[in-house]
Image 1: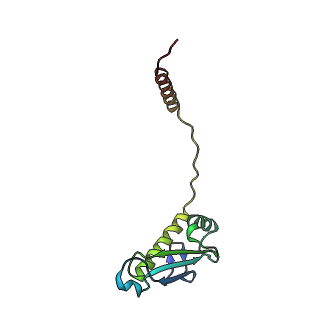
Image 2 (image 1 turned 90 degrees about the vertical axis):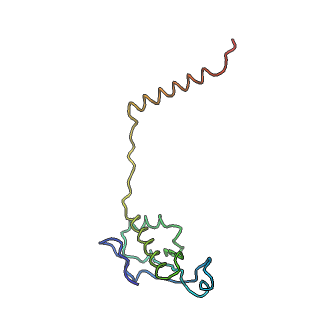
Image 3 (image 1 turned 135 degrees about the horizontal axis):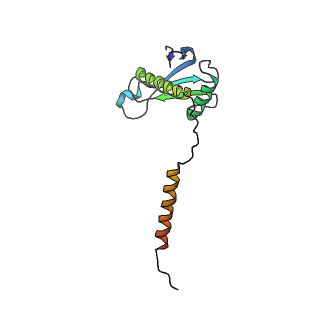
Length: 140
């Protein structure tokens, strides 16, 4: 297996990745019982030196359901009938996860409603109140 290039400055070395193949489930005829086409890509997040600590923390949060108790990130793919295409799909998914983890967190800045928005809200409230006041009859 070759190194996984994420960006021009980040590459996951092939020594940190492990590919395991097994039999796929689902329909496929007689061939599905003989061929190991399902690909599983395994990456030990506790031993990696490829990611910065903040990106690693975000990756662990993003892919929490794919990480087991030992800290291995496992990505499975059995969409295609060929090992190589399933492995490439796993590598593409891992690349997408790492790119998402590397994005900076955008903190929402609180803003106040504009004066016009406050005016419109209050006038709508007044109309709703008048509409409710007009409902029913008053017996006095």
